[in-house]
Length: 92
Image (cartoon, rainbow, N blue to C red; front, side, top):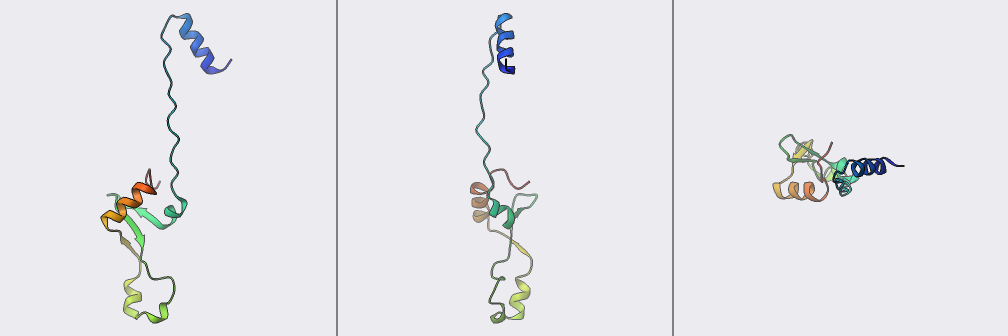
């Protein structure tokens, strides 16, 4: 007998009501590509690397290249969309 059958038998013999066990919905998967491209701050904002830094660098000025270093915080609406559709539980 399985564990559930033993529990049901015990409740039946003791004249108790059998509790209904409901299965939860399966967990949502986080998109793997988004895990690699974005991070969340402690306050919940979304951080992304600067765009425009991958190729065609020879036609950019030195100042442009300097200003494209590091990361940037996405605007609130873009951050909201990333968190809602691609990061259902945030990034662990």
